[in-house]
Image 1: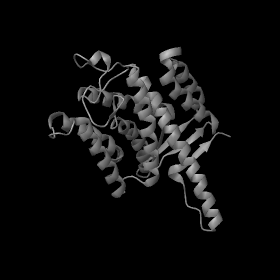
Image 2: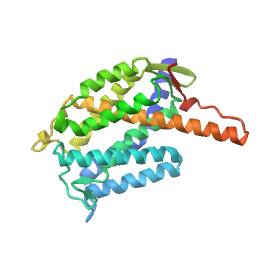
Image 3: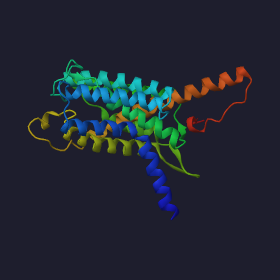
Image 4: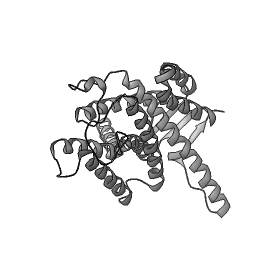
Length: 277
C-alpha cells in the first residue's frame, strides 16, 4: 500500500511540474482541429503560451526567479531555432504573423518548457545534488555542447565525445529527491537520459501534431529518429547545469543578504549543491 501511495505522490508532483509543457501540447492538439478565423495557428499558439506563462506566475505556480530562468531559455532556444531552420534541419511550413526568418516565436516556449519542468521539479521534489564537479567544468561542457549544435554543420558532430566527457565529469554526481518523507537518489547522468527520452517521445507527438517538420516528414509523418534522444540528452544537460548554477549563485547571494541584515539564515535544502572536495 505504501508503494502505491508513494507512486501516486511521485506521479502527482511530476504532473504539477509538467503543467507548462502540457499546456503547450494541449494547444498544439486543439489548434490542429479548431481554427480561429483570421488568426494563423502559430500566432494562436503563441498567445496561448503567453497567457499561460502569465497565469502561472499570477497563481504562484512559478516564482519570478523561475520566470527569469525560463525567459533565458526562451532566448537560447530561439537562437538555436533560427540557425537550425536556416540550415534546413527542420521547418515550420504553416503561415504566421509572428514568424521571424521562418521561425514562429512560440517555438522558444518549447525550450522554455524544459526549463520550467526542471525548476518546478527541483522545488517540488526538494532536490539536492552531491558530487557537483566545481564551478568551471559544468559551464565549459555546457558551452561546448551548445556550440556543437551549431558547428557540427561545418566541422563534424562531436556529440559522442561530449557524452563521454560528461560521463567522466559527472560520474560521481548524484541527485536526491523527496517523495513524502522518504529521500531517494539516482545518478545525475541517468536523470539526463530519462528526461531526454521523454522529451523525444514528446517530440514525436509534436511533429505528429504539426508543430514542426523534419525533412523526412515532408510527405508523410514518421517516427523521429532514435538518434535524436542524444540531442535532447545534451540539451537537458545544458538546462540542468544552468538551473543548478543559477540556484547556487542565488543561494550564495541570499546567504550574504541575511548575514548583512543580521537575521537568521534560512534553510536551502531545495537549492543545495554539495561540491566535491
